[in-house]
Image (cartoon, rainbow, N blue to C red; front, side):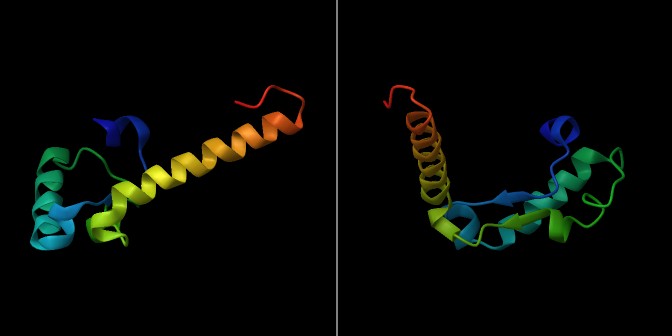
Length: 88
């Protein structure tokens, strides 16, 4: 459903299950292909090897994502504080 609504250019799979068992990525791709049933036809989804990919961060994908969100929040607060707003 999210693929149909958002149409992302790539979906990155991460976590211990993916990094410890590479065959899981192939199983996810097969299931994904079946769920789409040819409904979506675009250049991104046509090549599932490039569309559904394992994270380069392997089991640390969640932690790296959290760090990225935290860094973005700090950067946003820093910009606000420079604009004269109260820094939280």
